[in-house]
Image (tube, rainbow, N blue to C red; front, side, top):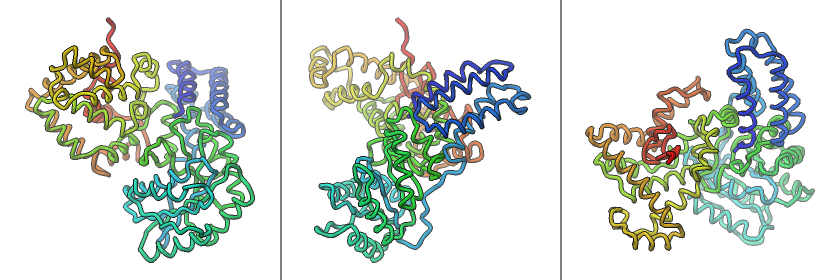
Length: 506
């Protein structure tokens, strides 16, 4: 997410960092490059003009001139400008303060991910907000649209309105409202039909449904990869349908970020969620400060801890910690850690949330460290027998050839995995010699991550008075310990959870 913009802005700030004095010419050059970076990221031109005008005025003011580190002050001005453009310091949550059932109307064009996003939102409200949720599909045109929502409902363990053939969207809406009231549901999510383009029939149908349902929230689901087209779509919908917020899908694949940066400024509507992956859990609450931090390569530790809190299996984590305390770490354990990393968004997803890691992407790519590496390692371990996973020393040349054929890799890949496992197992044994005290602390931290709203979460959210601030050494140490549990140990290179990185030169 935001890779291109992050890389470009990092280059701009690297050139001015460390200078004792910044002249007006230095600021002009920096602002010109920031302007180009934003335009290349497909940010709307009026938004870029306003952003640069405000930033230049502040960057040449007395506050910067008198600053001990003027370059850092300019970076802060850009950071604060991004927060303001994205919607300000205070995230706008869903309004659920209405007489149940609270109706959430989902609108958008066909192909924007509306039905999948409805299920993701339902899961979040059910699992995180502890609400009793029902979903209803009003899409009578797209083949199997209703069946798709019913299937997703089973997947996220949320009830869906039974399908009755031949009913119109208005009739389904009335039936859904009555059913939700009678059964005591807290929230009713209505998934409306979409079109490939905006047309009068689509708008008239959406307006009729809104008049019947009287939704508390009317959310537009838009594909962030379409850039400024997504912004224009939001404007067109908002003119005919009173929208209350936006959900941008495929944000994880949007290396530019133009739609995300333009939406609030152009439409005046808050972005409430970002769809950041294909999994049903991949829906992140939008927070302007944290997104601005990610754009500038400062990471998002709170998001990482939230992911861990949602995705880590506490029972498995405690069991793993007890086993590690005994100095045991076999290939089955490594497979479990790899699965947990994938569940939390994979290597790219986790690294994107860590401060300062963006600049190491070149090294990581050169070392072949990406999600494909995890897939290969999982395939190798899956091709082993249970006995081989528990006793890697059994893997002789013939067994390795069999495993290589079964997993579609070379024997050299198997040897690399075994070497990595051996290093991790040695580290586990070394740590267990002090009586397993370090692992006891690890178990305690993992338990805190597995429970929603644990003490570590509260402490991280309190950083900077509830705002995302630069993490302290203690914060990073706690994070490294957690990542060590996921990836098998802290590395000498300082990148948590990635054994042997950076790679040693021969």
